[in-house]
Length: 499
Image (cartoon, rainbow, N blue to C red):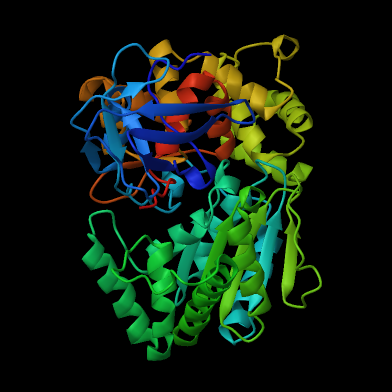
C-alpha cells in the first residue's frame, strides 16, 4: 500500500525518533494498527540537519492538518531526498503542543436523554463521596460493556455531588496503550490550569507557583513535574538518574501533590476507559489506590469487563457493575424517546428485546428507525410501517454503520474526518482541516447534530463538539481507509508532542 498524502513516523508514545548522522537522518518504523512495519531513511542535502531529540517530520501535504493543532512548525530550507521517491521533498518539523480539550460537560438540553435506571448506583457514589470528605478515601469503579452508560453515570454524579470538591479528569484513548502518561499529563494540565497559549515561562510559573503555595516541602517534586509536562531546564537535575529511579520518583511526586491537595479540599479524581490505559498511568493508579485510606479523595474509574486490576481486596474499593437496563427502565427510556401510545407497545417490546436494554443501543435504534421512516413525528410519534416490515439490526455497531452509510457523501466524509481527529474537537480545528467554506461546513455540522452523531458543548472562546458516544467515533473511524487514518497521530486533543 502506497501512502501518497504524506510521510510521517509513529513509534511508541506517539513520537518519532529522528537521529542526525553525517548527511543522513534515520527515521523509526511506520506502524499501523497491528499491521506491517516499514522503515524509511532520509538522505539530507548539505547543511540540513535535525536536532537529536525526539521529533516528527512531515511533508507539505500534512501541514494543513497539523496547523490546526496550533503546532509550531520549522521549515527546512533545502528539500530532502527520500529513498524510493524520485523528487526531493520539503520537510517540516512539528515542535509545538496541541491545545487542551474541554471536559465532558454536555448539558441535557444539548441532546442527552433523561437519566433513568441508575439511581441505586448514584446513591452508592454519594455515600462514597461523604466518606471521602471525612478523610476515608474511596475507590468507586463502574464496570460494563460499551453503551451501558458508564460515562453518563459519572456525568450525572458530578452534576449533583461535586459542590465543594476539586474535580480532576483524565481520559484514555484507543491508541493510548502506546502513549506513556497520556491521561496523567491531561490531568496535570487541568490541575495547573495550563492552556495552549502559555509559553514555557508561563507554564513553569503556574506549576511552581501552585506547588509552592500548596506546600513548600513539595518543591522537590518540581523537576519531575516539569519533565512530565515538557518544561525544559537548562541543567536537567534528572539526567543522572537511572530510568527506574526516575519513574518511581515521578509517580511518587504526582501522588504526593494530589494527596496534599486533598488536605486543602476534597478531590474527585476521574479516570475513564481504563481498558485503554498505558502501563505508566496504571502504575500511578496503583500507587494512588494504596495511599487513599486516609486521604480526602474519591477516585472514580470506569472500564470494560476485559480490564483487570489488583484492588479488589481493598476495603475502600467498590465496583458498580452496570448491566443493561431492566425491562421497566428500558420501557421508561423508550417512552421518553417516543411516547406511551398503544400502537407503539409491540415495537418498543421488539427494541428492548433486540437491544437487550443497552441504553446507547436503544437510542441509536430509535434514531435509525426515524431515519428509515418507521416513525413519523407530527406533534406526537406514530408508526408509519407495519411491524412485520421493520428490521432492527442485531448490534449497535451495525446500526451506527448503517446510519453513517445513509449520510450524504459530504457529511459522511466530514464525520469520518472528525473521527480521525478525536472524541472532541473545536470549530476552529475543523475549519482548518476541512476544505469547505464556513457556510458549507456549518450546515454539515448542523446536520450531524440533528442526526445526533455529535453534540455541541459549552466552551470559550471557540465552539467545541463531541461525539455522542465513543462507539460512534469508533465505528466512523473504522470506516476510514487505512491510509487516511494516519492523520490521527496529530489529534488535536489527545496527542502530546514531546520536545
